[in-house]
Amino acid sequence: MNDGGSNEAAISVVNLRVSYGDREILHGITFDVRRGETMVILGGSGSGKSTLLRTLVGLEKPTSGEVRIGGVNTAAISEREMDAIRKKMGMSFQGSALFGSMTVGENVALPLREHTDLQESTIRIMVRIKLGQVGLGSFEDYMPSQLSGGMKKRAAVARALAMDPEILFFDEPSAGLDPIIAAGLDELILNLKKAYALTIVVVTHELASAFLIADRMVYVDRGHIVTLGTREEFQASTHPRVRQFLDRVPEPEVTDELDYLQMLMGDSKSAKS
Amino acid sequence: MSMPRRIETIPIAIGGWAIDGLAYIGGLAALTGRSAYFIFIGPFRGERLRPQRAVHQAFAAGVEAIPIVSLILFFVGLIMALQSAYELRRLGAMQFLAGAVAVSILRELGPLLTAIVVIGRSGSAFAAEIGTKKVTEEVDALRTMALDPVAFLVAPKFLAMLVMVPCLTVWADFMGIVGGGMFGVSNAGFTIGSYIQATRDSIVIRDMYTGLIKSALFGLVITAVGCKEGFSTGAGAEEVGRSTTSAVVTSIALVILVDLVFTALFYFINPT
Image 1 (cartoon, rainbow over the protein chains, first blue to last red):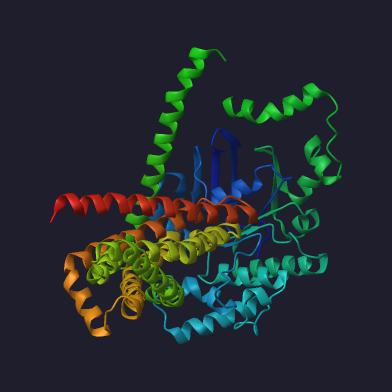
Image 2: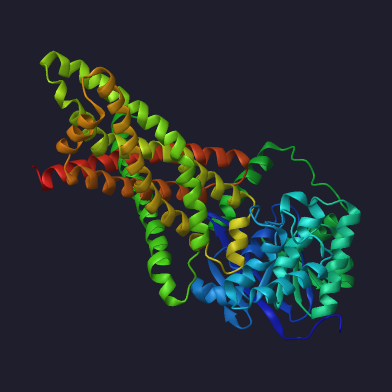
């Protein structure tokens, strides 16, 4: 497996703008995710990185711009056409988002039962395989509420893998986990990449995790892309916001009342511009 | 703000409310329409209906409501008999007691009180369930798995409620009449046989089906409001509480409104 993937774009984002009501969150974002690479989207809280991920998987509609997945502009297609693309994508949510009324095994089986005509016995075997891959082989009949935080995330990954996706998305895989469990999840992501040549997109603010799993990284700040490049390029970045993020420098406190007002007004102004 | 300006804002506010209200009703209709698609048209286009989910919902919304509905309607039947007897006794017309109870229960109180119980049990549960799923990103997870949340979460509820609320109403009507009969037999000079006979003589089939049509409509309103409030839940646990409250309050108001409209409609269409 080559480290950087091929040069063909699995996802291609062109001048993407996304707004919630009057508030524009992403102000024109352009980047590519190459087939087979692991792209980490970094950014502080409120930077728009989660919105970017939600737009990539089609949970938010862009106000303008394009999101091309496998050559299809998902901004311009119907929900039904989007569903066809979604079947080739898997998403692991921040809070795992397992269905609480179903067992872990049923959670993983759900997409298979709904979208395929496989025999029940085949589905059971596939569920065992998927759960085995994430290290939860013997937890098929547990309810999600009986699992720990890390196990829930693993189960969510198994569910995301159920349909053998081409692209896998992770929203904050290590959020709320202790460093050991978080490292285990990073390991899992690396293993999946090695085993399946998956295109993986990870949103995180954990630097250690990002540097471990990423082929390339993109740093999103206040709805703009500030830096995009390999780990080395990213480490060597001289952009003040990236340096602040890497060196963990706190935001200077707002002392001037006018500055504070500016900060509060900032969003509505940039939305109009 | 000057006085004329202040007066100017009144029609603006009224217009705003009216538009919001219409938009809300439109939202309910859209949700109902999409569910109807998934129930009646989807299965013929290769989309899967989920009967086992509907059965599960039907059990929770219908069967489990039987004890409380029985209790309430039995007592209300008894109360109706007591209240009617108070007036009928003065007129010396106690023989009309069975009819007074049966007609009021069948036409109005059975469907309405059943709906109120169902709002409290199921309407609130729908809002809380979908609201929680929204907060925990389960709704988003369904969408990323190419599963329509309306088909998956809402359509089975509509199907269950459309069947169960009228069924529950039939049972409620029966219990109400039993409650009335209890007073009739013990205090108004009826025998069990004569009470049943008097009830049968005083009601027509119309009393039955107008009540059942209304109860089916109540079921639709309750499901639509509960699910819509669930989907409009924002972020955070307290938002689930807010949407549950709002589902109950809005459902009660809309059920009464639908009751009024259809009772008036039945009255004017065929005033016999």
